[in-house]
Amino acid sequence: MPPSPPVQPPRNDAPVTGSSAPQENPSAQETVSVSVRPWGSLRYAQYRLLTGSGLLGSMGMQMREVVNFWVVFQLTSSALHLGLLGALRVLPLLVIGLLGGLLADMVDRRKILMVGYGTSLLTTGALAVLFATGNLELWHVYATTLVASTATVLDGPARTALIYGSVPRSHLTNALTIASSTHHSSVLIGPSVGGLLISFSGIGAAYAVTAAIYLPALAAVLMLSDARPAEGRARPRLGWSAMIEGIRWVWRTPVVLAFLTVDFSAIVFTSYKVLLPIYADKLGVGVAGFGFLTSAPGVGFLIGSAFLLAVGDVRRKGLTVTIGIVGYVAAVFVFAVSPWFIMSLAALALAGGFDGVSAIIRRTTLQLLVPDDIRGRATSVVQVFTRGTTSLGLMGTGGVATVLGAGGALLAGGVFALVVLGAVTLRWRQMLTFRL
Image (cartoon, rainbow, N blue to C red):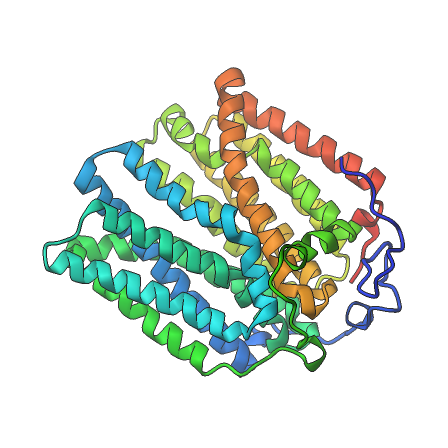
């Protein structure tokens, strides 16, 4: 466990250390008892534009990924080359993930999104032209994937930071829930659309349609207004000290640090996705069953998101995150020992649902507490941490499974997550008492 941050850090954007925010932080101190309808955030034009562009951009990314994987397989028939393509998607996050947050605080966030969608449009369009002219080669797919993934990493913090200014504070949980729901919807739908395009229209048409999807996404961004609050217009300078300010803020904010710690412990040894082929074989459900197992957590995430939309803003955020972690681990335990396919599907859906509720509440807490002048950098820290943890979890769970077996790995990982959760709640009691 990391050492405890000071209880009263000497900054006005100090973290919450109990059940209420310090008086110096008006944005965190403000309490709103407004009843928010399930789709209430969509009443605001700025948010509708952000949500529409985000949905289209995510759909395009998922479709391009499917087409790229198919093209690489057709060119090489090599699992190694497919793995390299996946690594090129993660590499920019590890190298320049924090830079995206700094840029989001330095420049107009709308311009970052324009560059991101514009880059995706140009790279996907280039692949369409290269394929149509018979000039597409393996290195073209790798190069465009690296460039497009870099742009996506850089625009991620800007997109999330823009949500905060697009709706009233009382609607933030609702807004982030809708954003997460639309993203996961694209993850479920995008690959299917990409596969159907390849089947019915061919690779060239699939690339062309995917590129065209970025046009309305880019148009929506062009219609955005500058939602950054006036008090948040101060721009940091490019430099290492400014870049790691988000890390400093997270380290000095016990609640956020506690949330990240329990998230890490819950994922690092319970990343069941890497074990799904083993369970599909164990359950005797074949490729079709494997597809259902892969989709079940996403469906559960959408159900969890729908629950949050119906409930509205959750004030007892610390307790909700704790319940989400415990529920997730319990569902993983059931999946680890399940002898039946239907039970396994239900367990994975529950795991996705609990994980979704916990993740959305953690994101909302961060956006409510962080000052706008470092919002992009704090968001990028969480982005790098969560996606990095996911990658680490795939390796960690797979490694333990080689020793303990698939079921043993998930059971041991779940116990580890619960032990860390207990230690965190003892060290930082605001995990259970924190309200916002």
